[in-house]
Amino acid sequence: GKTFRPIFIKKILDSDGNLIEENLPFFYPKKVPDPKGEQVLSPQTAYLMTYLLEGVVQHGTGWKARALKRPVAAKTGTTDQFIDAWFIGYTPEFITGVWVGFDDEKSLGENETGARAASPIWVTFMSKILKDKPVHDFSIPEGVEFAKIDPRTGQFGTGSETFLECFKEGTGPAQEVKTQLRTTADFFKYDFNLSAKTQ
Image (cartoon, rainbow, N blue to C red):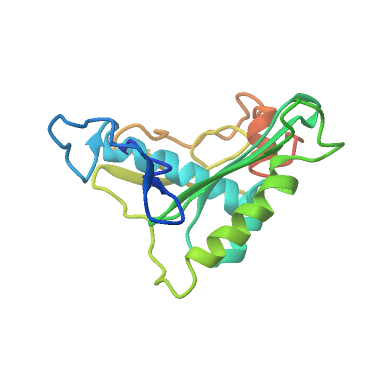
């Protein structure tokens, strides 16, 4: 739940070592901010988002990131007519984004989605920078709780098709709902590979 202001190019030197350009941090010459980042979301809210995005990798369109064999949270993205393909993902150590597209906004081609066009690039890059790095889990802050949820209703459930979901303490479903209340949104079914059929 912290924000950082990245600098993509620190400086440019020529072949003789002469400084051509230097990008100073946004705060220069003001007081340097906390290197640990500025807290903008509660740790609980940040973890809930991470847990959801881990689900995209484990059960949905971000499945190719499972090749890293470590915790990954990610989201695919595809614009209309397959003009842009995105894959943004992170581990406890690194975050990386990949965009695939043309500079004249033409289509990449049928079915060139974020999962198909962008995620393989992301996986290849991350596998190199994470090589030989120890595997860490995302830390779970105090103030969150877990419950089994029926994907058809979004309510507490006990059947074989339930999945584990996390909530801020006191905000989870209060009781089991045995009758369907509503159908699941199409985008949710797609990202988490859930059947469009209801019972």
